[in-house]
Length: 157
Image (cartoon, rainbow, N blue to C red; front, top):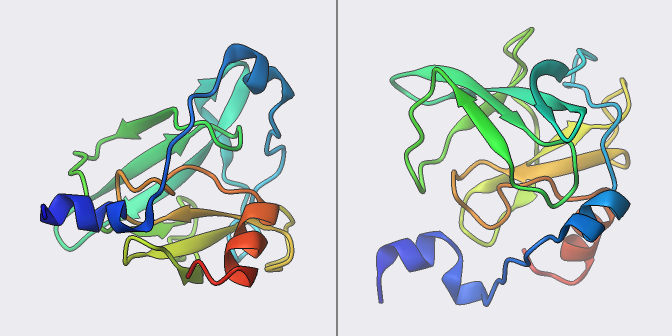
């Protein structure tokens, strides 16, 4: 059994769905998103289907850079800025304004953590979306508040 398969959560029978244009038009779009200190992370550093992206600082032991992700739930469009993407690497996800790391919401099936990005300027775990810290994980796209609660209740973690 390949270690990459295990690291990417292959043992959890995860599936990635193809998002059609029709689905994208009906998708939930994050219109507000904040760090734990209340800084907005929606910026025009990347624009996805006419919507500003969520800009996150990625950090590991040797380097840091930015990641701009689509604000559309389930869309995996992203742009790396000054950061070399290494598949399966676990990175710290921080606010690009204050460098505060986003708090851990829960464990991810891949062995990394899901971090909470707040949809209110107050750090409230009942108003958040999540993303995995492992680059390339099936949960390295935005997960809705509903999906985060569903995973937690059904003991996926």
